[in-house]
Length: 163
Image (cartoon, rainbow, N blue to C red; front, side, top):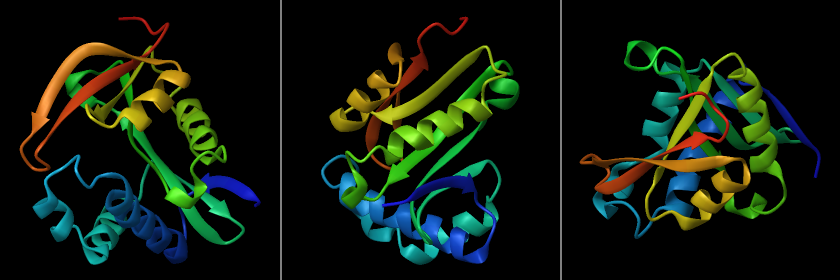
């Protein structure tokens, strides 16, 4: 295994990111989100999203294969001093190998200028919540229900951030 974290740039990387997006949802979310949503989330839809929103994405590559990605950015007018990890996905075969940790560190480095950093995670995704807690995030009490995916989400904020 030879993991490299880099900005997503090439068509192969965009298509690789799309595959990871699609496959990670199929691997991690059955039973956590509405199955009808998962059934409609095709590789083609993920590819379309990857091409439409290529900015603020870093990919993890094992040699030439994309095996994970992190998306990051700001909250805009909603919270101008807050950076956010919008997405962090790794193929299941890479769980426990440090890839997600490398992606998180790289994403947080991109958000270093923000006084506060947050992310949203499915309330029932215990594995992800444990990982984010290890990365220094804590639940801040904010919750929402996404009618699109049929699931509750909680917001987590990086400890030590200014509120």
